[in-house]
Image 1 (cartoon, helix red, strand yellow):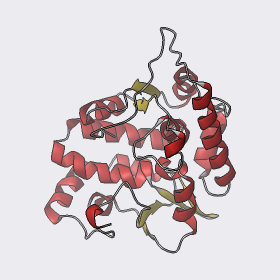
Image 2: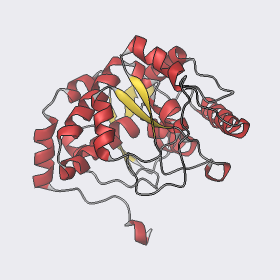
Image 3: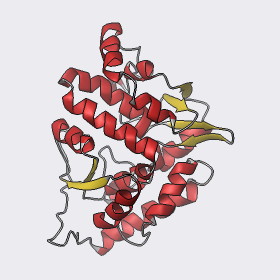
Image 4: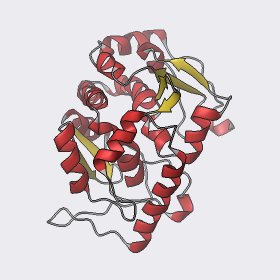
Amino acid sequence: MAKKASQYVSKQSDENGHIAWTDEENKIWHDLVARQLDILPGKACDEYIEGMRLLDMPTDRIPQLYEINKVLAETTGWQVAEVPALIPFDEFFRLLANKQFPVATFIRTREEFDYLQEPDIFHEIFGHCPLLTNPAFAHFTHQYGKLGYAATPKERVYLARLYWFTVEFGLLKTKEGLRIYGGGILSSPGETKYALESDVPEREPLKPLDALRTPYRIDIMQPIYYTIEDVNELFEIADMDIMAMVKEAMELGLFEPKFPPKDAA
């Protein structure tokens, strides 16, 4: 999502859609992917694992966007769209409304290897794109984009919370135990373990109205996660009257934050 400032500059593709990544950038991708692939078995949801199989992305280099687009087009009709490091919310929602998932074409430095506040190509491609091969996840993201594009700035702030607790930090409650479908967790080694293994966070069944009212911070481990029992629940949520719930959430107000203010943390 949009940020106010960035030290990163996205690379631009050539006339053939090819981005020239350096050897070091490809090594960073390899090391990030290798670390997560070692952690995710038994933690990522089956739909994500299937998406990884379908995408068959390289581990030794950053994939080209046209390689990802070929698979997304064949599965759900989505595409990834090359964007600068920062884009306005209008553009973010417009892209999602047109089944285009924005991907900032830069990768983090070694200095920010473990944690990056803004989404880089590793987070977007590795964290989110496998689930975009899933019809329910793809439909939910598309509907969310259409709602966000038509919403007011204040409504978008509430909508962002629903996105945060599903697309970014959603958990799946399966017969085999908790599994991850949120890209913000799937691309973070620390949060992958914390979300499933720690006794600290709360885990509650997802009620969209509750998610719309739940404050969050982007720079801490999440104090609460919302769970669904089947990825197909996202079909049902997407087709609810979400904007009516946004208006209700605005009237009811936010829940008390489960974390200290940022300046006091």
